[in-house]
Length: 213
Image 1 (cartoon, rainbow, N blue to C red):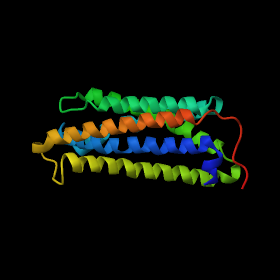
Image 2: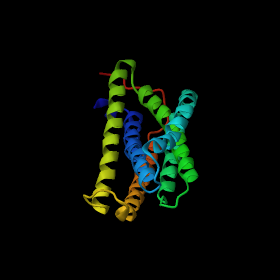
Image 3: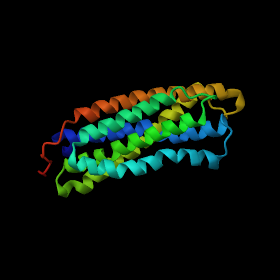
Image 4: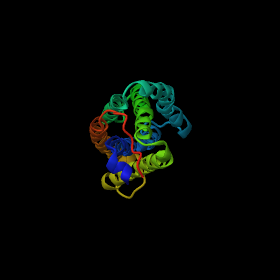
């Protein structure tokens, strides 16, 4: 716990990671349901569409990581979180008539945003501690990721339970399903905006690290 108390950058970067995963992990799950139920696509075709986000993340992440070695991670991570929040905001307006190109474009925005956030944020976390703490810091970051993923799915399921209820999704309750998506993306957008605050509030790297046991 001393890593959190002695380094503002370490603490706030991990909180930003927790929030980012909490706001984004369930997106693929929600969109896979939307593409299959309201758009009538097969599971294979829906999965092919969803590849757009991780594909662009894969392209952007290496460049973002290199940039974070030369420039401060605070700006890059916050920019990535901002793009992610913008993408989530655009998904608020998702409905039965939303064209496929719109969904793909927003997925690309999310992929670029997450790519810009993830690598610089991890760089900031690892740079905030001495080498002997690298294993602990990496483990804590992985814990933040898994906790965020669980929270994201928990939020999605909670909204489904409140809006749709404990029933199977059928054409009869597609309007309630769409409403669930709306509120889920509203909440995820708000969470991501909070993540921008923590990403900016971490401060710039000063060269100081947590080195004492």
